[in-house]
Image (tube, rainbow, N blue to C red; front, side, top):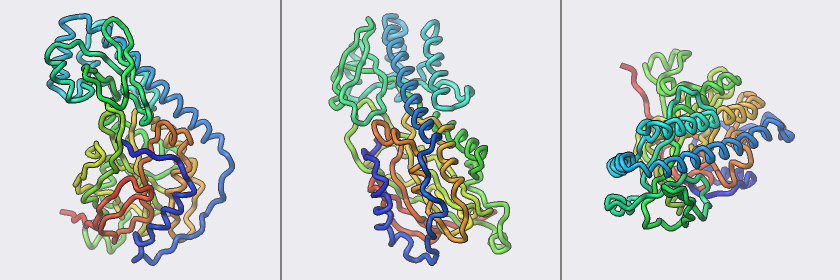
Length: 394
């Protein structure tokens, strides 16, 4: 679902300039950056290496799971149960349904995936199984023996390897949906993202960056001004509609899981990042109307904030992401006027996240409390319609 793009840091600033109408009503002016361009950072190199290691570990675990499940289909009883589950459920928690040696193999793969993504062991099973495409239902229901393949995270993949119950590999075209039914072994990205948001917030706070828990994003800042207290509520920016750009991707890829990093200066004048989960944003080319709060302005010192939209694609290590962001943002200090933080966050993302496995979707510069209307991201990969919304206390 992820729009395809290449990394062009220089054009990001140019794109931001085209959004001047986004905050035309604002009187605040962006000050010069309060930090010099950093020299090559060993931490960034470590983060890049860690991301490659995460992607490799997740892919390896999924492939081993796919092979194990394929071999297990020689058991007629289990084969029937799994077929029924795949035909009646969009996503099958395969580890929980398995037993014996297969369950042990899948549990080991689950642990490897959780560890690679920087998630706690308590996250539980992340592996799930689904039918590759609805067009395969008829053949599967008719008794055609399915193959099993691991999901790919590379948008530019041209081939997919699927396995049969004898362990034989079948090379498939990633762009053309096969007629033969294929089970796809994937990471439950919704579950991974929910757990990852908790880890991201915890690690940001641990590294010195303010970050609100989900409930705090939707509640007023405790250090409210007398004026705010008198109004018994707080102002927010609410998303009334959102869409990501359409793009052709491999049939084996499932729905994406999107989240947004909202950043700005907190009431204490220090940089803060508030992750916002957007679990409804599954497919590109679809307009969603979530009425979701994106920014809680009581958390911020200035009437401006930035938003960076990211995707959980199975290979994100949330601890590494938090450390990379914290390393970049902690060099920025409050100079008495708003400083855009989008470029600092984007520069913190390791280079290899922008090549075969891009997690960055789009960014919105200088969101203001008064913004109302439809605004396109700096990269043109999506748009959001937002409006001011006052949350009244009971």
